[in-house]
Length: 305
Image (cartoon, rainbow, N blue to C red):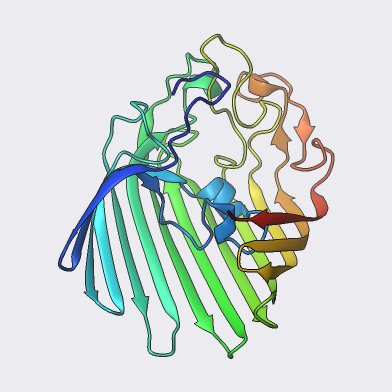
């Protein structure tokens, strides 16, 4: 794995795990337990992802965890990790990952995840016109997910995240981002299920939605989001309505309609001009910077072999 613009081997998960009695130990690189939606698209109802997942949460961790099953309804876990999305030597600092899941008699369930670590900020490096070696400052995220069967066919899911980082963009100032996702699923039959998702996500400082993710070894184009789209400080709303059709046990077709809207400060354009005293171009999040709302209509087809 290198820093070039093209992927080599992508080790999404690479870990070892042993179990004894009610305990389980894991060491390596693994998917983050944060949130209701997951990295493998086959594990999600909708073909698109909410803002809180895309911009507000970690995807993977590297470290070791201990999981203890208290009884059939309660499981707790804690461990040491090397921050968010780190599988190399980019983050020399250690952090903590703690989880708890609880199932109740009415078949509802609650899961919470707390992560504390030290992560790169935008207080120097690319955003300050420096070399790109960004400093690390304390960050934590606390997530909650609750699932409740309302009837035999109707299920509600609610998720809330809160996160913050010290000195993220300016010394002495916290960056905060948080969101609330709500889902309703109605199971018509074994083949058909309808669903809705309403997503509210706020990035107070414009720290997470947009920004620079580093350059390639030869100094070519920045990876990740374009330098023309960064620092959208405000609130994003998303409403999705869709269905899952499963004609057999290996296939799912997911049609969906999605509406997005942004309220807040316009993003900065023209790369680092906003941070170097220049006159940045005012941009919006959608339609190549032209609009603060959009509508998406589409579907996908997944067949597992």
